[in-house]
Image (cartoon, rainbow, N blue to C red; front, side, top):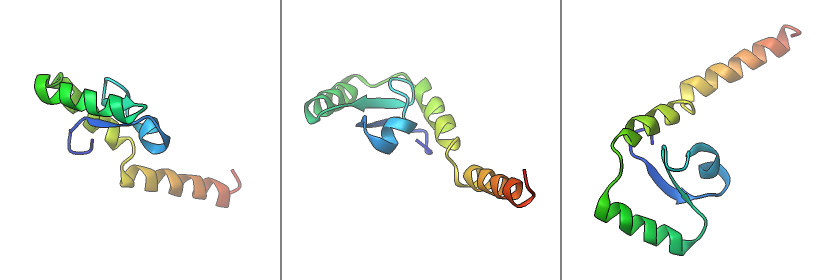
Length: 81
């Protein structure tokens, strides 16, 4: 997603929390759905706007952003709120 590529993955744990189904990628629940959707995407493609949405979503989880959030939280704790 960080490269602007929508992701096809299982709706479990991390991917299920980061991928927005049919917006930044596709979430499936079983191997059969995975294969069928992969074939459909290969043959018919997808809306190119998903690339922009995938990149934007991935940046919400970027390392600099997460580091800044952690540092802010630590600062609040160390300074008593």
